[in-house]
Length: 138
Figure 1 (spheres, rainbow, N blue to C red):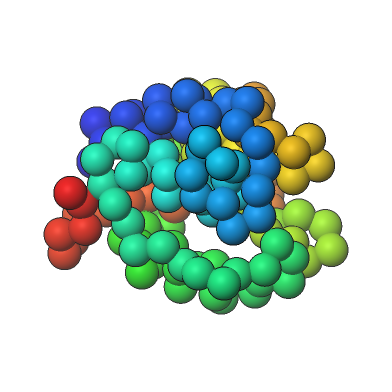
Figure 2 (cartoon, one colour):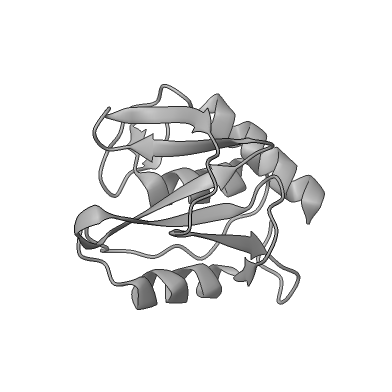
């Protein structure tokens, strides 16, 4: 899975600068934080079961966790390239990003584009890793 995660992170980095678009999953048209993760894994050769009709704000942690688990992600205690960061933001908003070595790529709604930033381990961040299980990848 590490090789797949590395390919997904490289794919996410290639999306830096793509425009932000709520519910977007195509980097040519725009992506949100969920779309970025799913598009990066698809570009790496792994098409995941994607959530649909989720709000930009007000999506409960339980629904986000269920969507990650349905796609094959499991909570992790360490970080590896290609892991997903689930962050709790103010006002009950949650955000996803793809983790690299000391870096994170995410779709920034305020900046209206995909950005790469230093990875700052925060108490409000939980790490999710795609694990082996039923075939999900192309």
